[in-house]
Amino acid sequence: MKRLIIISLTIIMFFIKNSAMSNNQEIFYDLEIKSINGEIIKLKDYRDKVVLIVNTASYCGFTKQYEDLQELWDKYKSKGLIVLGVPSDSFNQEKKTNNEVQEFCEFNFNINFPLTTITDVKGKNAHEIFKWAENNFGKSAIPKWNFHKILINREGNVEETYASFTNPTSNKIINKIEEIL
Image (tube, rainbow, N blue to C red; front, side, top):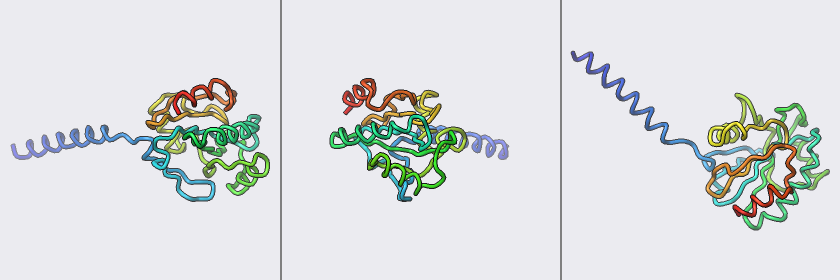
């Protein structure tokens, strides 16, 4: 009888622990990512801001979108927009080192918005930001190609996602950014 009680209590404790854990879901502001310089970017520092996360690549046909991302950053950063470039070789179109990416971005596009280290954006090795976005918004948050865009609102939720061919300065994106700023 005593053994049955112990087994029952153990099973009950297991279920109580799991239900408590499921209520403690990670939020956008809990996440971190390394900057291209190796410093930690704490997304809690972006609380109450609108964040446009874009997986980038130096050798992609969409690479000219860097110019438009910089234009968005220049125009809206004072109003609370963060453009976060996430260089990725998930589609085999990125340079080999962070230094090469940084030099390429600065020399060719005069980029001064935040960039991360080269990061996986899809699959089992995807960075937690992209896993979080998929879990909270669905499959449309998974980058299908370079220059996929994920727009995070001031509450830290995925507001919208945009395919690679949607230009950062398109009316579709600008109207949504202005709406949620």
